[in-house]
Every structure is written in structure tokens, then in C-alpha cells.
Length: 309
Ligand SMILES: [Zn+2]
Image 1 (cartoon, helix red, strand yellow):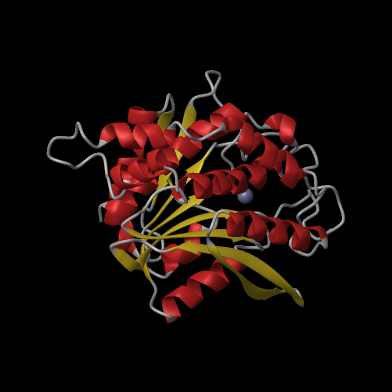
Image 2: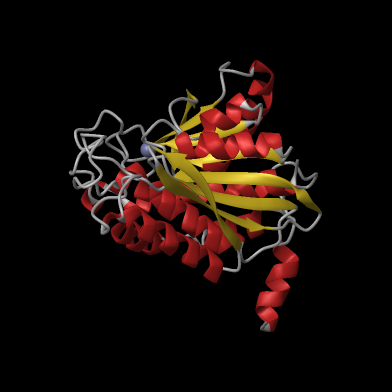
């Protein structure tokens, strides 16, 4: 390890940013880490993932996509395994990557994004379904977060999960959340990215920051709200984004919420766009610079949650 990297490692390790007494020391390192997020890498990955043609949960292409995600995360130094589950008589795979924390290795911050896609006809595993915004964008964001998080120590462990079976009704995340609850995993928070690449306002700056408002386990609402509030501060501190508070609904955090875990999400708000769930959801609808800003906001939030319970 070259000396500058080692010094950076020591200096950046275990630093949160919003709740230190002096505040001044902590902000620059996080700002430096956030500045390492590269839109061009997110763009390359969105193009790669969309290039499979479809990532329908029942397709043969998604098997290859899952292996590619596994290989990327393995190369970054993560411990990676497939979490298999059954869907319509087939075996599908979540990709689960873990990097242990320094001070609280038994506690996890889960960062999630589904990598499956769909066409207008959900039942057709062969129809074109590039799923660029939904959800190559979130998956590519997950890979870029993985790259930066692999460069620093964190307090608690980081677990990145690329889910399959989302479009069929959150099947992969439900299977994983049940297993996590049954095995009594200590999950501090679950932060999900589903569609982070297509801004819907004319200035291209708005992003939904989603928190839990009731649902199955009202007792986890307060922690969700506290994490969402941190994310809103992260947005205004480290990015040009304008965060809009919204509710959790309809994606992979819901099964985690149902098991009592504190969840938050980010979303571009494009589920009314004409390309949504069609073969038009191609890379040209994704704004890579905007996606990078969302990932910067998520990274700053993740660093704080991982380092300061
Ligand atoms: Zn989605």
C-alpha cells in the first residue's frame, strides 16, 4: 500500500460528519470521498447492464448479469455469495456482498438495489427489457458505492445486496429479509435505491428521500425518519440536489420494514414516465450526472450511519 493511501486510510477511517462537537474536522474527508464518485463509471455500468437486452427474473440473461455483479464486487475485495430463492419453479439469485466493519462487525448497514427488469408484459422473459432507469441505475449506483466504500474502514459492516425478483412482487428481498430476521441479523438500517437516473423536474435536481410512515411496524418509523433527515442534510451539504421527503412504497425495503428493520429509500420519481416498464427504458433516459449526485448523497449518508449509530 503506498503511503498516501495508507495515510488517507487512517485519516478517513471511522469519521462521521454531522454530529461531531467541532464539525470542522469531519466534513472535509467525507467531501473528499464523495468527490470520488464518477458519473462516467455509473454510465458505463448502466450501458453494460442494459446491454443484456433483458434482465427479467426468469431470463437466461439475468444469470449472466448476476455473475457479472458478483465478479465486480469480488474484485473490489468484498466477500460475495449468492442468496438463492425460488420463483415460478426457477432458482433466482440475490447477490450479497459483505465488508466487515472495524468496531461493530456484527452490525450491518444494508444497501440494496434490484437488478432484474421487466417489459410491459411481466410474464414474458424474452421481451426486450433494458431496464436502464429501472433499475440498472440503482444497481450501477450500488457498484459505485461499493468501489468507494472498499477504500475506507467503516464502524459497522457494509452489506450490499443486488436483488432479483423485485418486479414479480419483491420476491428476492422478501426471501432475504425473512432469512435475516430468522437468523437475527443486526441490521441498523436498510437503504434502497430503485430508479435514481431520470430526474423529473426541469432543473434536474429533485430526488425523493423516502421514509417509513406506518406500514407493518410503526415502531420503526422514528429511526427511519431520523436516517431520512440525515440524508436530507447530506443532500444539501454535499450535492446540488433538492431532496423531497416521501413515503416508503412498492420496492425492496418493504419486506425489511415488515421484519421491523429501519428503512429509507431514494427514488427519482419517474414511475409515471412513458418509458417506465417498457423497452424504451434505455440508457438514453438516464442522466448519469444526476445519478452520480444521488449516489454522492447516499454515500455521505451511508458513511454517517455506518460510523455513528
Ligand atoms: Zn424498480
